[in-house]
Length: 374
Image (cartoon, rainbow, N blue to C red; front, side, top):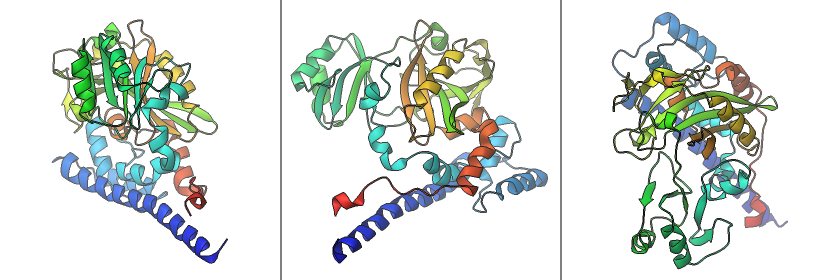
């Protein structure tokens, strides 16, 4: 290898590694500013003894620590626990350690979940739009007209971005669509990457509080000590005329207890509590008898993604009370939602995670081969 090639490779690798370090640093700063300005309320304070306990616990792992997040979570849940994970440390250190962010943007393309999760129950896909190319549900290239022809035959379908999407943004429900309508939508250049899927008919249990949206279960899995553990789970519910249940789109969420009942209150994205659904129903009246099936499903599915050790799964329940995988969130999987309503995200595995991330971290090189670009 020539000297200029060696220098080019070294510089390119430096830039590549630096990008993720800077991303983590800026994430940490952003989360701290957001917590103080948007989330903390008057009265969100801790006693001296509580503050002392929290700092004593976290100083074992890092001195770069902001107690604002403990104030928020402890006041919202009413539970004092030193194990709450601060959002800034999660974004800057824990999530990037557990999950391979370098390859996430490709693996997380929803258009490929049919292949990754083959054998699991998922919504039927009618059309894929990948990098501007239309494909049918067997991944065979089709024309623009053929894609429209397939879609107009369906009474109802959902379209959503397959990449760089979160919070239920740009999800659209079509009903009895005409050729001209779907053509106009696709001609609008909304995205080069979309997925068109069946609209799930949900269980009467999950529909009870808000039938207009497909209300889903967010359940987290953790790959640790050679096993898959299921962590906390929450029930996400739409509000008003919303067709999605995401908290960032106005939805609310309540916790699912270990005995499969729901907590008797819910929260929105800013931690505001609701003792009843805004449309009238009581949360505690529901009993999710299908949760054992949900846990079995995500434990099996998580084994398909060993590059991503912490995953937030969105699971719908169909009209036969069977779990359907809607989405796998491979990074930044809803820590705030879970901790606001359920408690410390890693539960009894908190010390195992923190010891590995902060005390016994194993060095790993980036997975990209810089040589191919030099």
